Amino acid sequence: MTAPAAPRAGGLWVTFEGGDGAGKTTQATLLEEWLRESGRAVVRTREPGGTEVGVLIRNIVLHHRGDVAPRAEALLYAADRAHHVATLVRPALERGDVVIQDRYLDSSVAYQGAGRVLDATEVRDLSLWATEGALPDITVLLDLDEASGRARLDADDKPFDRLEAEKDEFHARVRAAFLALAAAEPERFLVLDATLPAEELAAVVRERVAAALA
Ligand code: TYD
Image (cartoon, rainbow, N blue to C red; front, top):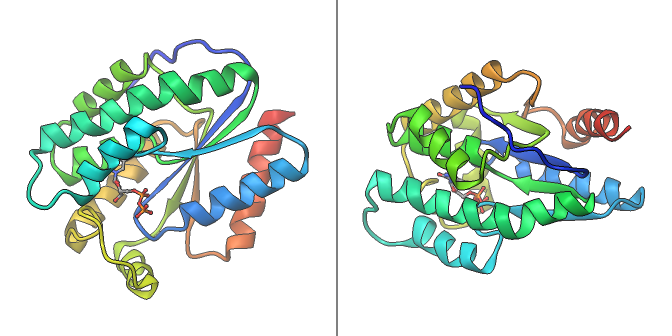
């Protein structure tokens, strides 16, 4: 699974990955606050839906009633990603900003690959084609077993989206796929136990980001 990362200047790109309910948004917010306090220019974004076009795509992939064919779903996420990287992420990195992003292509490999049972390499290659090979500097994987993830979502009291509503067995495959991705690229990934207190996790993330910015 080697990827030809396209060269790009400046900036730092941090993505957060993990199952639903793992606490990505909390950690992204804590990192954003810390970086802003230290005076860094930060762009906070997410997939799907980091751009206007992306919001439209997000609406289809998460809220369309009825089936979306697995390959169509993979292409929709890849289309969102192509537009997002070209119009928002790459320009921000070129300005020298820190980009903090909820989910990226690892989510496609885990959810559309292992979850929907498409070929993982093909799903990854599709996203790499879409983004001209763009890979984050740091990917924080918040690892959580599917039962705990489900319990957190239940406690949230929000209606489930199409993927959240999948069975535990789907989420178990997604989790295993994330862990396999992290094992294949240990330099990019920081794997954390999502059951630890949020402040403790945030401190580890800060340490890793500070080292990369130094
Ligand atoms: P997310 O924005 O994390 O959900 P929420 O807003 O409810 O916290 O992610 C939305 C869903 O999209 C999540 O269930 C995972 C799924 N997803 C994919 O299946 N493939 C992808 O490439 C991405 C980016 C997300």
